[in-house]
Amino acid sequence: MRERVVRVAAGESQQAQQNWRYCGGQIKLWRESAGVTRQGLADEAGYDYEYVKSMECGRRRPTLRLLQIADQMCGAGGKLTAAHEFMKPERFPERTQQYVLVEAEAITIQWFEPMLIPGLLQTADYARALINSNCPPLDADTVDERVAARLQRQEKLTSKPPTHFSFVIHEAALRSVVGGRELMRGQCAHLLEIGQRRHLSVQVLPFSTAPTAALSGPMVLVETGDHERYAFVDGQSTGALYGEGDKLSTLTQRYGMIRMQALSVEESAQFIRGMAEKP
Image: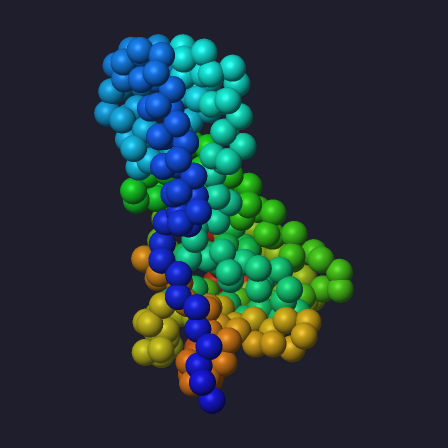
């Protein structure tokens, strides 16, 4: 059987980057036509010269403030400000956009994470600390948009009819301090609370029993209402969504092996409680 896979690069989509370049070019054309220098626009907007240059060249997303100031200084009559509708930050990194669409249709989700708390189980504070530390840094609007989008995805946890969830979290994810010890205590408390739901299980994979397969990175297995099956693997620079073939079979086998070596639900809750109580 032929393997169906979609690989997507990290970063903004091509459409978003094209929008940036077109809008930046329009700012430059209006500015030059009105006899406004780039330094003059930068000073009026409160930005430095290189920051404005990067927006005009399409390397950065033109901000609403720059569009408004440029519109006023160049007499564009609202034409530049109107572009803001097409400059809104993308809610998800490009490499995860197709997976999110599949996730929305899921009736079962099996998720293994070796280094981070799964996105559907993250508190708002954990998600913000994680997204805010992105490298290269994201602008404040994009951080806000992506945190809101991640929290909105969590509505899946209470949807009706309920989706069945199985989460396995490596011990390393619980010991990695994201945003400080107090934040992690709150995150552990959230895991304990959410793990009490009947259609959801949270298990911990301890260092002592972790199989080699657990070192290969995160994976998510999904079955949709149409009984289509997918596997998603997310890396630092790319994401891959597999729809059939050997990869889907291999990842399903690996998840089963990982889950067999994890603590039981009750043992996992005790482990997480112990992490929450650490000073």
